[in-house]
Structure formats: structure tokens, C-alpha cells
Length: 201
Image 1: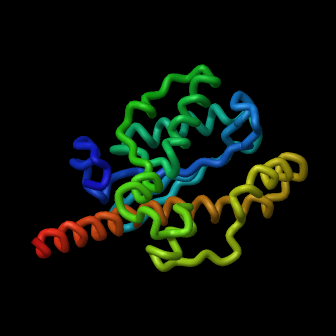
Image 2 (image 1 turned 120 degrees about the vertical axis):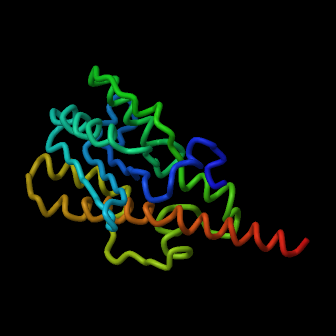
């Protein structure tokens, strides 16, 4: 019901793998290098998070290889905004002359789905941090703004100070944990809406 996709609808909420990426965010798409990935999924009663870092541009291919190994054992990946993550990764696989079936996996854009199907105009915006605060009841303390992350990575490349990356890792970890819990919330809202409509008839 949430995905409006029969393939995704058959996948239990406990099984998807949630994905978040960070890039250099340069204006030219060909220069948009991937340097950080976070993946989260449910396993043995706990949320498992894996984070991948390319310590320099030359390690992007190794990061993609590790991602490919993980994705091969998961049901689907759920990008956070307008399929940006999957499209980005598909491009980066091509640029590194690597084959990937990532784009063929069923995927659900949580933020777009929430905006269109559930929340409409009731929130100020559909950024993940807004949904966390207003729907999940979680407020981040000291979270690094997304626009600051690329510059932090450039500073890391120059100085190699691991403290520059700590906030990025925490930001990505919180992103995938929030996405991991979100489908349960959306499904509960949709179910409640459906029941209310049914009982009103």
C-alpha cells in the first residue's frame, strides 16, 4: 500500500536494506565522487549498520565492491530522496567500469512516498530531520548539516584528522536508523486512515 508496487508490497518490513550516501557534491555530475555510504537492516532482533568510507578518491571502486557484496544478499535498497542514491551509485559503477544490478532491485523513496501518500502539506518540509522530529518524535543534537559534509571530507583529504569524519559517520548512522523505523510508522498511519474511512461509511 505504501509503495504502490506489488513487488515491494510482498517484502516484509523487517527485511529491506536502507541506504544513505555522501558525495563531493561538485556541480559537474562527472565529478560527483562517492566517498561515504551507510547501510542499515534488521537482523536477529537488532538494527545492523554498516558504514563504508573511501579514504581518498582512489578507494571509490573498493567501496562500491563492498557495497555490491552486501547488496547481493539483501531484498532491496531504499534511497532517501527521489531515487538519488540509486541513480548516483549506478553512475559511479559505470564510471568505474563495474557491472551492478543495483538499479534493477526494487526500491522505495521513503521521502517522496511520505510526501505524496501520507503527509501532504501538513509538514513544513519532508527533510528526514523534519520527519524525525514531527512524526518519530526524535530530535538530533549537534547534527552536522548536510551542506557541510563535502567540505569536511575535503578537509580530511588535506589534514587526515579522523575527528573531521566523526560527525559524518554519526549523521549517516542516524539517517539509516530513522529510515529503518519509518516504514512501520507510515504503514500504521495508512492503516489508521483506511480504518477511519471504513468506519465512517
